[in-house]
Amino acid sequence: MAKVAKKTAKRKAASKKASASKAKVAVSPATARAQTSLDKLVKELTAQAKKVAAARKKAAAAKKKSGKSKKAADKRAAKSASAAVSKAADKAKTLRGKISTAKQNLAAAKKAEAAKAAQAAAKARVEDLEAKLAAKAEADLAKAVKAFQSKWEAKRKAADKKKVSTMAKKLDAKLKAAEKKEKAKAAAAAKKAAAKAKAAEKKAAAKAKVAAKKAAAKAKAAEKKAAARAKAAEKKAAAKAKAAAKKAATKAKAKPKKAKKAKPKAKPKAKPKAKAATKKRGRPAKKKK
Picture 1 (cartoon, rainbow, N blue to C red):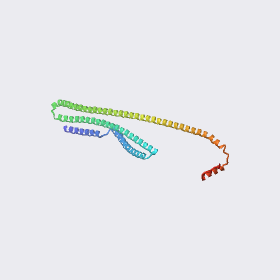
Picture 2: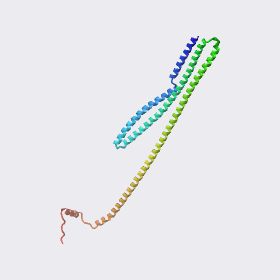
Picture 3: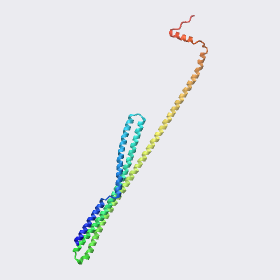
Picture 4: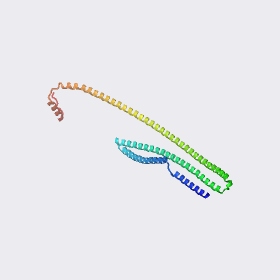
C-alpha cells in the first residue's frame, strides 16, 4: 500500500512540474500584442531611416548645385530639400519615441507575465511539497506502531502544515519584495521620462522664441530698407522733375531770341550756300575800299 501511494505521489509531482513548465513557455496576449506593436514600429523606423538618408543625399546634391548656380529655382530646390530632411528626421524622432514607449510596454507585459509564472511555479512547488510530505507521511505511518498511529499522524500533520506555511510565507514575501522593486523602478522611469519631456518642451519653446525674434528683426530690417528705397526714389524723382522744369524754362527762354534773329534776314537760300562753299575753298576775298 505504501509503495502504491509513493508511485501515485511521484506521478502527481511530475504532472505538476510539466504544467508549470508549460505555463512558463506560454506567452500572454498582452505580451504578444506589445511585441507585435514594437516589431511594426521598428519596421517603420527602418523604412523612415532609409527615407531620411535619401532626403539627405538629395539635399546635399541640391545644396551643391545651388552653390555653383545663381538661379533662384536651384536655391529654392535646395531650401525645399533641406526642409524635407528636417521633416523626415522629425518623423524618425517621433517613431523612436514610440519605439521607446513600446519597449517599456513590452517590458511591463513580460514582467507581469513573469510574475504570473512565478506565482504559478510557487503554487506548484507548494502543491508538490504537500504531495511529497503526504506521501512520506503515509509511508512512515505504515511502519509506525498501531498504538501510536493517531498521535503520530496528528503530530506529523502539524509539522507538515508548519513547513508548508513557512514556505508559502517565504515565497509570498519574495514575490512582494520583487513587486515593490519593480514598482519603484517603474516610478523612477516615469519620472525620468516626464523630466525629459519637460526639458524637450522648454527647448522647443526657447527655439520658437528665438525664431520669432529673428523673424521680427528680419521684418524690421526689410521695412527699413524699403523705406530707404522709397525715400531715395522720391528724392530721385524730385531731382528729375526739377531738372526737367529747369530745362523747360531754359528752352522757353531761348525760343524768342531765335525768332528776332530770323526777321531781318530775307535773302534767298542759295546765297548762304555759296558763302559756305567759298569758306571751304580758302580765305574770303578782301573788300575794296
